[in-house]
Each structure stands twice: as C-alpha cells, then as structure tokens.
Amino acid sequence: MRSRAADTVTFSRMALAFLLILLVPLSPEFLILYAIIGLTDVLDGQVARRTKSVSMYGGVFDSIADAMVAVILLYCLIPHLVWEEWMVMWIAAIAAVRLVSLGIGTGRFGKPAFVHTYLNKVAGLLLFLTPFLLVVFDVPFVVMLVCSVTTVSAFEYLYINCSSEGFDPNLAGILIR
Image 1 (spheres, rainbow, N blue to C red):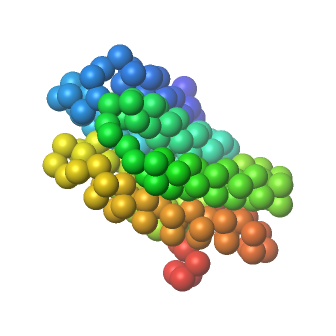
Image 2 (cartoon, rainbow, N blue to C red):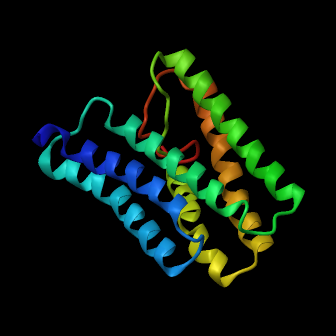
Image 3 (cartoon, helix red, strand yellow):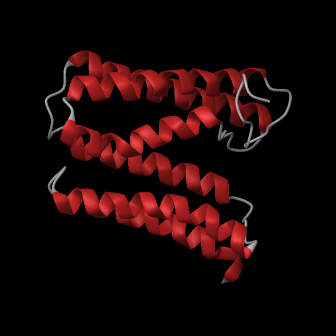
C-alpha cells in the first residue's frame, strides 16, 4: 500500500470533487469542501516524496485530478453566476489550447505530456482561488485575472509540447531553465 499512498490521496481528490455537485455553489459548505480538495492537491506530492512512493503515473493522475476539479467547478459555477459570452468563449479557448497541447505532446512523446511549469502552477493556484475570489470580487474581474494568467500558461504549454526535443514534465518554464 505504501507505493500507492500518494495516488490514494489523488484519487480522494477526484471523489471529493464530485461531492461539490451536491452543494450550493459558493456556500460555506462548498468552500470548506473545496478547501479540503485543495489540501489533497498539496498533500499528494508531499506524501509521494516523504514515502518515496512516486508511482509511474502519479503526475498524470495528479493532472487528471486537477482537470476533473476544474471541470466540476465550472459545472457548478457556470449556472450559478452571471456570465457574459466573452467569458465563456475565453474559458473554452483556453481549454481548447490545453487539449491541443496535450494531444501534440502525447503524440510527440508517446505518453501523456502534462508539463508542470512555474507558470502552470501559478495558473493552477489562481484557478483554485477562483471560488474564494468570487465571494469578494465581481465575476468579470475574476475572469480577466484568472484567464489572463491561464492563457499565457496554456500557450507556454503549447510551445513546450511543440518545440521541446524531449519530454520533461518538470520543466520550470520557457524563460526559466
């Protein structure tokens, strides 16, 4: 079981994310569960390093869990908030760039090509903070902030998967070597 401890934490994030669907978006219960989900995202990497139980697909599972949480979060928030068309189109465009990047990288390197750059981590942190930001700020401001950083991150991801000679999931970024 030791070799699967981090994966178990990651899979718990996936399961907990589905519980968000049962709660009122942005309610205190929703935000508490969402914070717990975020904690599992931090814990899985720490558990893997401490127990030296990094599985072959741990990074892939982590990226899939992150994507699942993002999709479920959108599923919960889109009907709950007032969205303008430009916001939905921007989010869809980012998702499309990320999917194309993943497809290109996977085709080029023969394995799921998720890259964990610093910019990707900043974008992920902003995505995680989105529900909390929406409690404080209006939707257009939050969308502009999060989508601006996430757009740059998505194009960095595309550039890396199109131009890298080899696959390095832990590449710091295109400007940071």
